[in-house]
Length: 591
Image (cartoon, rainbow, N blue to C red; front, side, top):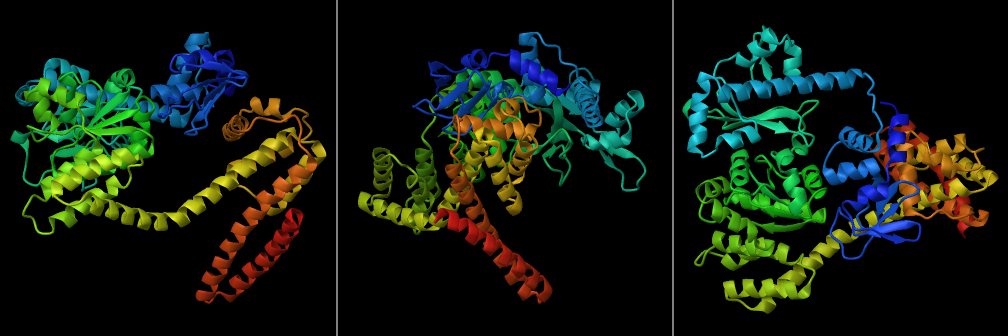
């Protein structure tokens, strides 16, 4: 496909109509406003600009064009979003051949064939009976087998190799690249990576099989063999970006605006079978920010239902931090009456559904688990429980809510409310000291980025001669990260254009187009810019940039001197002199 086709789709698509399917919008001047679908808020900070075909949330920072909106809200990739919109507006997308794209396409085909092969072995082949019996014992019916395309890998060394290589004609190098085979130590040939295992195909959000997780069957297990084996990282499979069952669950997640996170594949399948369709599995690993981002596009609440053991408790605490950082509401499904969701959902589906419908507060979970871990009679019980609970209670911003849980903890430990409150205050003071320097740095970085984007925005409407002067100043110093530098180069190249705004709106280069959108949606463009204001803003941006560069150079001089690199230290010192001269010139403008 080419950029013209993408532009045609965006031009013909009514962004207000698309966004309006997910957000209640009201007209507000030249914009449409509503509550952001990507984070929880009470005051509308989500804006759609119909004329420019852009959206922006001034609360969480989400923004972009109609394609990006559909990607985020539906949890789909660029191609799938483009296809949906193209079909809606009657544009036929023609895809160009690409070596990298062609290779990925073939990898998808090979991995999909492997999934079909494993599924056939499980459901039709005589040797699949051992796996079928295991699934019956686990109360996983045929419907669930089909929904998740479960399979079975033969115990032999080359079952899949024979099928894909000899029958389908794929080369060994490609099979290895797909993570399906392992090279023999002798260097002669390959063998199946997965053998004698119940196979769980891993899907991306678009429904493509990208890898596998294989669970060894108890009757085929050998000493020292891992219970689970996963596909390695490949061109099409990235573990930290994958949630097992997300593809099957995303419609339920979208409808209920919540996701239930369990640990393992069988936990998920049993939960799904018990009627909790919005369940996904983290796969026995720590939850990642990318996984949270996947569900945040569709839901605003996370219910953590990880195993009721020490590792599960630790994983819940870590997951809460990541989910709440993204603005998601979090609660915990308290596992009672079984060791994990799989056992409860299989044996008592009604009980499992009731647990999911009645999650507990994270704070109740943390307090209860700490009290269970250090029961009455345990040495230093109060100190140990405090260490586990105070960091969480200290995060509660609402005073009445915090007092509630302080009271619960005080009553449980038979100590005064005041003593717990004192410990929380002490913890918060230490935290404030540790965070103050980092907060100041972050605020300064944020201010620098805002000033630089504002400067670039003003340049779009400034007079040609003023643009030339500003660009000369910036070019001498080399200010900005790569995207900003590219934007400055673009403005310089188009300096004769009387309407850079219109030109920028149609810019096909992704990085420039993205930055342009960010600037325009973050700052309403003014009719004109006074030269004096423009130069003062330029000086402010350059002064801060030079200050940062000078500190960096001073550090480099120190390092060079430590290593005895005198010539290098002298050369950097000369650079510092030049930077200081420029810094003083610019500071004089702001005086």
